[in-house]
Image 1: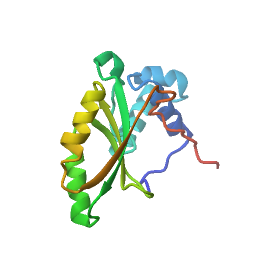
Image 2: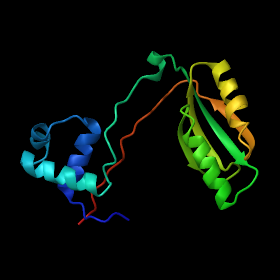
Image 3: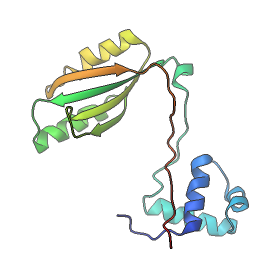
Image 4: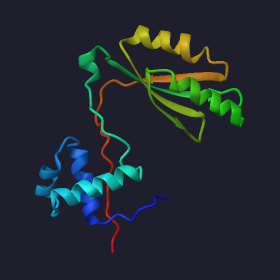
Length: 160
C-alpha cells in the first residue's frame, strides 16, 4: 500500500508524465488545472513517496543492433530463501535480461532478454543462464514481431 492519498489532479499529472516525462511544470499546467508551482510540489511529493521511481528514455533496440527479443522460462534446482537471493543477484548482473519475474506455474521465473542475434541468444543461454548453479532448465521463445509495448500504466482515479 502506498503512504499518500492521491486525488484526481495527481492522476492527471501522472498520466501526463507517462505521455511525456520531459514536460515542464508550465506545460503540465496547460493540461492539469493547477499552477506550475502546485504541480511541482505534487511531483516532488510523488517522487518522495516512491510512486514516481525515476525518468527514463525509450530506445529502439532494432536500431541499436539488438534485434532479437526472447522470453525464457527458468526453473531452479532449489527453492530456499538463500537460493532465491542468489538467483536474483546473478540475474541482476546480466544486462541482457531486461525484466525478471517470479511466477507461479511450470517455471519459477520468466525473463525478457534482448540480444544482437540468434547466435548471441544461444551463447547467452548456454554460457550465462545454464551455467548458473541454481538453474535446472531454461526454455526460450523468440519474439517474431512486437505488437504492443508500453510502460504506461492504466491509471484510474478512485471513484469518490
